[in-house]
Image 1 (tube, rainbow, N blue to C red):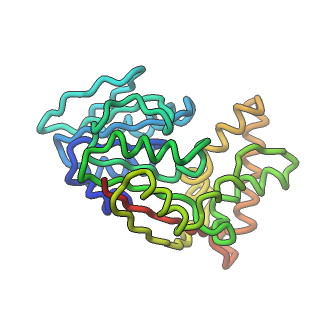
Image 2 (cartoon, rainbow, N blue to C red):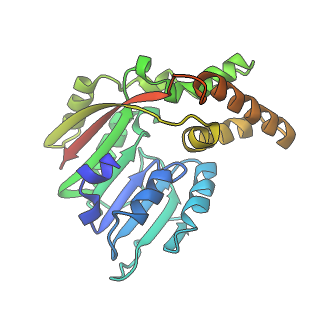
Length: 261
């Protein structure tokens, strides 16, 4: 929720979140801080993530519009409007200066070229408005994000989840320089380490792992029985390493960047 707070998303009328994934954060934001009358546009490049997003956000009762191509929705004073569409962070299908808030929550470190994403963020944001980016921090303090790939390898699977590449932006000084080079006039960085107080696999894995696991299972063409068996093994690994009988907790370090156009 830190990105929504620092970008003042609760006061904004047209919010864009890219690489929204399963929509867990979007669900919390839309049900809590999002003001009535606002339009909340979400994008992701993965069809699987969009499917899960729709399942998660469909229970809110808000207007949820799955668009094939972008059409700016009309705001209504007493409604919260949510849009989801497929898009690449590096080539967004929106006009210049379309949004008064931009959010990228743990997606910039997995694009092909983060400089392109920063330029697109700057382009679609209105002058004077804020963009919020979060990326993974130091790898040694990020077992929360390395758990799935480490476990799959232990179970004999070769993965291409690109966990190593995902730490490519973990230097906050270099990241700030890149954001300012893209044109933003101000950038504030916050480094936060957050142990995850989840001791049961259903709490942790469904939030942090399920979406990536679904993508992996699809790429591997796993049958439903094999998929279920593998998921059970992953749950067992989590319980052995972080379960209620252990003192360990999964943690992650994140870098939060708040930039003003």
